[in-house]
Amino acid sequence: MTACAKDDGVPRGGDVLLIVVDTLRADALSSYGNPANTSPVLDALAKDGIRFDEVLTQAPNTATSHATLFTGLYPWTHRVANLTSLEHGTAGLPPAFITVAERFEAAGYKTAAFTDGGPLGLAWNLMQGFETLEGRFEGATAKVDQALDYYAKDAGDAPLFTLLHTYEVHEPYLPPLEYVERFNSNPGYNGRVKQSELAARALRDSGGETEPNGKILFEHKADFDAEDVRYLWDLYLGEVAFTDHELGRLFDALKASGRYDDMTIIVTADHGEEFGEHGQFGHLDLNRETLHVPMIVKLPVGTYDEWRGKSVDVRVNQVDAHATLLSMLDADWPVDAGRSFFIDLAEGAFVERTSFAETTEGLYGARVQFDHMRFQRSVRLGKYGFVESEVGGIVQRELFPARLELAPLERAPEPTLTSTLPGGVVGDETARPMLDGLAGRVSKHMREAETLRAELLEGQSSVFTYKVDGDQRSELEALGYLDGKPAPKKPAGD
Image (cartoon, rainbow, N blue to C red; front, top):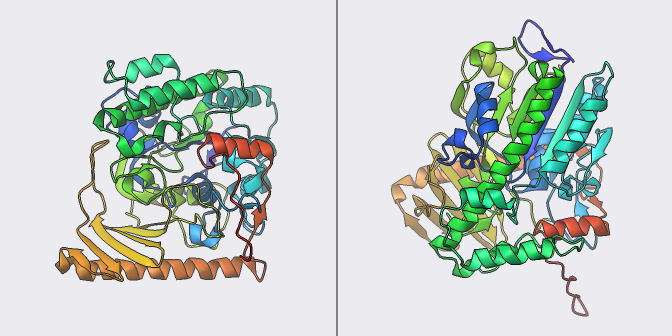
């Protein structure tokens, strides 16, 4: 379907493809500075489009981040969480909140989603608006095959809005063996992570239907040395390169069919991944490694061609992608969150965004599966970053450089200033006014997000839960969200 641009230069009416590679941190791609050749396909797409150097997502987990991407609402407004008490249901998206797929559907698009399930299954209510939905946990190859089959069968006149999502890069990192060999920087390594990898592969290849628990490679993380972490990172890069290869099959087919030139393609991630830079592994905290994601936007030929191959070096937000998609529909959205990229393109320069992020895990009394869990709120503004953490009645506030450039696996330095309540202050006390000022910004943001939630729900219940079936529970175990053990019974009298 051919896109056309109005006088404002915004392409409308053409096919749109949104690709979300789950758990892909920006610096794992060679176009974002990784020295290994991990992403020749996405690098080529960046040369054919616009690459955003610093995109910050609004949450460090799948369900919460996708809910923001799909609705344009900050996490504290939609309150979608990866986990609650699965015995009672999941913290899903309230039906009153409209998704971007519903917007495209209402505008006459055919809508389809090919996802690896988990929180992108029906139990979180995030997939409303998709007429075609494949939501099984199968990996990048299956998702690309499903999308290719869909495009090959489409012969209608309606434009297409398609989502492709894969957990291929998510833990456990088990790429094909050729990719393990290609990215293994220490061929003689035979340590803890290697043994866990072999055990995970044996379990996966045993013929059973259950995937290995996603955290199996982290089982000895308390004792990891530098070689263990390096091998874990190498496995992750192997997954990135394999996923890149599979996306190449998709793009080649789109070019061969004649769809590619007139299609808008957005490639991004919902969150990144930590490899010990702040003492953690996975994606729980609001650190740069979990929030800094790639974003590449390829526009239809003839639309802002002068930007082709350029990079944007100012901070933008994941929520801006939602605003950009809505602007392609001329759809109004009365929420002041996100700014369409087309506004900046038309003005010839991008405006740096203030970036808020927050966690929602444990909000509804979840039985937490992790070894630490806390509510966190953060803001990145100008040269500064601020994170506020709350657990067990203790509030900790940290100030640090907002664009703290760490090499992969490099341990982060101590914050510029740390304030603990109750407790004291450690660090550069001359930075106290900035810390207090950013704390005030975060508090204001949270109040506004909560007020907006009440307005959008218009008196409806504030808790929306959806049931998880057995297959979905198995997917969550395979992703490391559940340990597979039954929940402990509450003591009598509770």
